[in-house]
Length: 163
Ligand code: GDP
Ligand code: MG
Image (cartoon, rainbow, N blue to C red; front, side):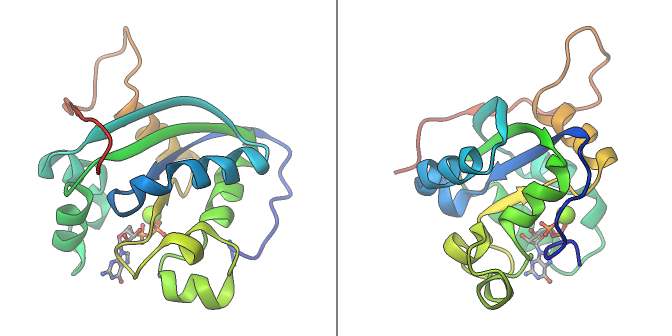
């Protein structure tokens, strides 16, 4: 699957990562893993999402049973969102974060960020875009480009580090 496959692509890609509210205090360890893997961090923002912003970000999961819990969690505290650039960055970042369920990550990908820092299926430490199309939408969501009509109505509440 995508987690065990090594990215064969030598294409330079950009992707969107999020340090979720459960692991803001693991920021430095996660950033270290990112640089160790050779990604470049090209944009970064700390903010707290409203419920509606979190809902907009995860709109494709609206019909899922875990949606309300996910939105509640994602708006419960600060997140750190960043753009990563690197060769095969989309797949490589997904490989570094590991499988969605933190317990699965601990058994199948013990070095992954979700294995190291995640708690369960929802509180799983990090987000990563799953395709080029998602990456484009998600980067635009957090870092709207100037001069383009904004597709996102997100306002982003600036916040200081969660303590
Ligand atoms: P991802 O791409 O690996 O983040 O997984 P998805 O896009 O499928 O789901 C988005 C997020 O919803 C995940 O990162 C989890 O935080 C949460 N989630 C996904 N699947 C489940 C599930 O089966 N149960 C629960 N409680 N949360 C889930
Ligand atoms: Mg996903």
